Length: 449
Image: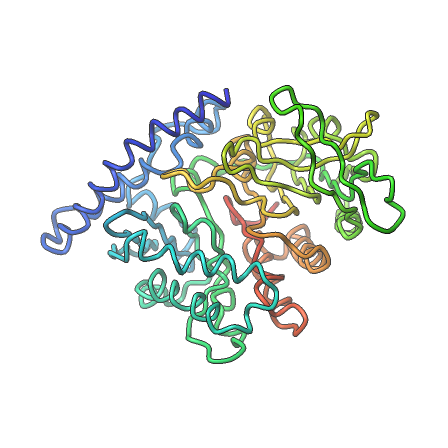
C-alpha cells in the first residue's frame, strides 16, 4: 500500500548514500585504470539505485521479466538507431556522473556535485515559471550554465543525433533540458540556440524502466477529460468561489484552492475529437468529468488526455492529485496519485494537461515522486506532464499541434512534442520558455501506433 511504498523509498534512500559514494569512487578510478571496467560497474550501480520502487511495481504487475537492471551494453542495444543517444546522470554529494550512450559506443564523464548544480537549477526553475523572465540576464545565464555543466561535455559525441533520452537524477528531474541554451545570450535568445532546436527530447526514470515497457500496443479508446464543473456558483462569469474538497477523514478541514473554470481545456477536448479519426473517443466534460467516470474509463484507454487543475503534495507525494467535477454533493473531487497506483493501465500515452503535474518530492534515486510516476507505475507506457503552472491558451495550441502529428502517425511522440514546442518558440507572443517548455514526455518516445 501507500505506507509500504513510502517506507521502502525511505529505506532505499539510506542505501543510496552508500551507492552514491561507490559511484563517485569508481568514477575517480576509471581514468586511472581505463580498461578495468570501473565506469561499467558505476553504471550498473546507478541503474540499481534509481527508480527502484517503480521497477518493483512494473515487475509486480507482470509488465517486466528477467533481470531488473541493465548493463551499459544492454542500454546501448535499447537505442533504435545511431540517431538516438541516452544521457544518464547520477547526481551525488561529491560529483555527478554522466554516461553518454549510443549504439556505436559510450563514454563516462565526471561533472559538478549536487550543491554546485542546485543554485542554477533553482534559478532556472523560478525564472521559467515567469513569462517575462527570459528578458532578464539572470535567467539567460541560468539557462546556459547548466548546459555547459551537464550537456556540453557530451556534445562532441552527439554528431548525427536527432533524439535524446535523458535519464535525470534528483534535482535534474525538475528542469526541461529542451530550454537550455547552447550559447550564452546577451539579449533575447535566438530560437536556434535552444536545445529543442537540435533534438527531440524525452525522459525516463532509468534505462531499465524503458526496457521494462518495451513492446506491446494499446488499441483502446481515446479518453479526453476537460473543463470539469467544480460546483462554482459563479461559473457563468465573474470570480469563481473557493470550493470545498471531497471530505477526507484524515483531513476533515481540507479546503480546495479556488478552482477557476478552464474553458480552454474544453478546447483541448474538442481538438482530440476532431483529430480522433476512426478511433473511438470518450469525452468527459462539465458534470461528466467526475472521478468515478474517469477511473472507469482509464483501464480501457489507449490515449488519455486529462485537462484540469492539478496540485502537488510535497510531504506526501501520493496525495498529489487532479481536481475533477463536483458530484451530486456539490464538492469538487480529487484523483490522487495513490488512486492511480491501484489501476492496471494499458495506455500508450497519458497526458496530464494541468499545473505542475510532473512535480512531487525529490527522493534520492526515485526522481520526482508524484503523479507522473504513479501513471507509469500503473502501466502507462508514456506520460506527458508539466513542470510549472501553465498558460491554458498556449497549452491548448501546443496540444493541438502535438496530437495533430502524433495521432496521425506522422511523427513519433518525442518528435511531435518537439515540433509543437518549436512552433510556439518561433512566435513572438509565446517565445518565452514559460509557454512552450513546461510539458515533458516521460517513457516511450516512439510513434503512438
